[in-house]
Length: 160
Image (spheres, rainbow, N blue to C red):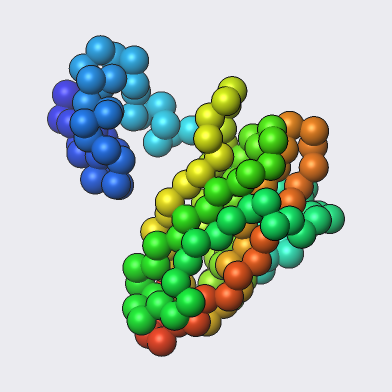
């Protein structure tokens, strides 16, 4: 029972809206231990370069698109806490990925969408230094699109 409580606290402490998730936890429809225990793409998330991470995810040859919107600060005064919003206006977007090129491990997030879900995410990341942020969108037709934006960091947030 204590393990379940700790998982619930951890799940909710990660910025997920408690008001939306608590009813699901109470009904047994949401199982945080299954989410936390799911198999991660370890090699991609621990890759030391953007090209290695993209290769591990089989995402080479992405085309640049203005239909992917990155909302990020031009200058982040503290790299330990940088809010990044990404959205895709491409029809059939099934996943969004966020990479920070100069971070020790560039792949920051992968968010998958089902059905008619709005392809939007707000992610809080750490940035080691001034870097290019890449947002990739994978669409249902198997194509990959990318948008790039530079974020200047005055105080780094990642250890090397």
